[in-house]
Each structure stands twice: as structure tokens, then as C-alpha cells.
Image 1 (cartoon, rainbow, N blue to C red):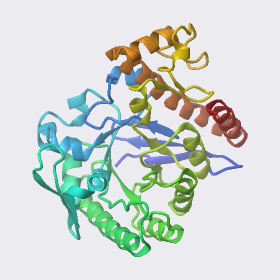
Image 2 (cartoon, rainbow, N blue to C red; image 1 turned 120 degrees about the vertical axis):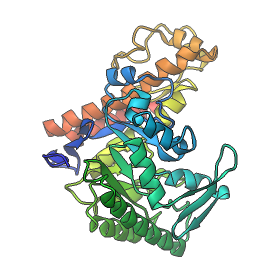
Image 3 (cartoon, one colour; image 1 turned 90 degrees about the horizontal axis):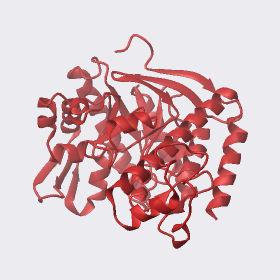
Image 4 (cartoon, rainbow, N blue to C red; image 1 turned 30 degrees about the vertical axis):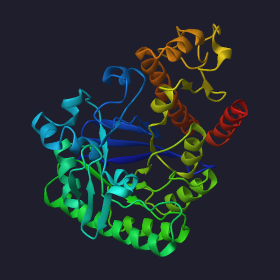
Length: 378
């Protein structure tokens, strides 16, 4: 394990629960709060590792489910691990594949020992249990590995949710024991547990407190943004985060929009990921401090301005008109430039948040930022 605490709280905002911290991993230090670009299949779509570094990425994600199906974790292990395989020398977090199993509901069978399912590629029969999940992530060489969890659907009946959360807790215990027995934790890798609970505040509290007793290196909040309204989603995060250990990193999985992230930082969340910045970029949607704009709209056909005068990056030298032309012409460069812009926008927002927590005025700053953004969105 690192010779210093792997998570160091540097400052906590006095008016909110926002935290400024430092997370140490085998492949570098991550300054939090942080947004993590998603590289599902060993690549952040349309963006190279060098470009990710240039726009301020500190840590990226890989996907256990997809990488194990193709090209397989064994091949990646034999090629030197995921870092070497994809040419990224910074920290990597890999999810457990649990969400993919959730999204493949018609193709899977959840059992006490794991999940049997069919490959979305060729229908081959596969199985993911705690041992398989931890072995795959050890093969990948993940800096942060996630436990196997079951993501309850929305809406979810209370007894179904409670049963699901109990199963996730048992899997978490097994994952940690496996990571201890095989030396994964001793070698300085981190394993994060995942607190579920659907829309039941008391179940979320019980799940968070039970997992906290297992003393994982970090904790995630799962099962949010799976179809519930935004106010309900934020309530679920709030119902979980306050019962997770204050001296460990807290990670909300799979979201969100810029205002959502700022609100969750104020609750005490440290880490975020989402495919949205690159996914919407490929359709011409880009983010600005005054809300998102869709470059496919006709009004930008002859617009000489850059996307934003306040966000300086690769797109600054190009007009909205040119970027619209690339987008409507389905040019590959559109996906690269707009993905880099959106990722930089998210990463720069996190840098601003860190600076404001350090300055002591996060509460007023984040409310003003959200007000401006939402006014422009309307």
C-alpha cells in the first residue's frame, strides 16, 4: 500500500459538505473533486491519451464487462495490462460489469453466487461472480476496481430492493476477501464498494452503514439516474453519501450534468463519471457556461463565434459555423473536436470547483454558476 494515506482531505467547505482532497493510486495522484472520462472499450471515444492529458484528465474508466468479452482480460494481461495496452499512464478505474448486467435484463439470470448471462455480441453463455469480477480487474491492472453489485431497476418494490441490497453486500464481502487473498489490495490497488437502495432512504442508509463497516478503500453510490426524476435522483445520492465514511473517497456512478455534479459536490461527493460529454458531442451538442447548444441548429450556419469565449481549448480557433459544417457533414473531426471540448468543459468545471473550495466560497459560487447555466438553457 502507499506509504501515505491513499485519501487525504485537504479542505472542507464551511457552508456545504464539499471537500477538496487528494487520492493516491499506483499510477499517480488524483485531485478531487474530479470527473472521469469513460473509456468503455479501452478508449475514450474519438480522443487520444495525449489529448486527454492536454485537456486535464487525471483518471479514466474502463469497462470490465466489455473488455472481458473483447479482446478478453487474459489478452490484455498478456499485453502488459490495460495501461500499456491503451497507452494511458495515468490511473484507471474499472467498473464491475454490474450495470451492464442490469441493462441486459432479458439476457441474464441473477443467482446467489453471481450472474449468468448471454453475450450481447454472439449470445455465448457467460458468468460473472465476485471471483470472476476481481480476477478480470486484476488481469486489467486496475488502479481502482469496483465490487460486483446488483443494480435494482426503477421503479422497484421494497422487498425486491431489500433482497438485492443484501445480495450486493454479500458480494462486496466476497470481493474484498478475494482481493485480500490474491494480494491485489496488498499491491496498492484499491477496491470500492457500491451502496445501492433504489428510492428507499432507509435502505440506502442501511446499505451505506453496512458497507462502511467493511472498511473498503473507497465507496460508490450506485443505482441512480436509471429512470427516476432528477429530484428523486439527488435525494438518493443525499440519502447515501452522508452515511459513507468521511475519510474515504465517495464516487457517484454514471452521472451527471454540470449542475447535478456541482450539487452533488455540495453534498460531499468526490468523483464522477458519465458517457454523456462524448455521446452528445457526436450529435453536435456542446456545453457552455450559458447552457448547452446544438450546433445542428440552422441559426449557427453562419455564426463566426467560437463555442465559448470563456472555455479555451482545441475548438477555440474554429467558428460555430465550421463546427456545424463538420457535424452536419458527418466528418470524423467533428466527433474529436466536440468530444474534446465537452470533456474539457467538465474537467475545467471540476478544477473551478476545487479552487472555490480552497478559496472558501464554494457555496455562493456554485449557486451562481447553476443559476447562469440554467437561465441560458431555458
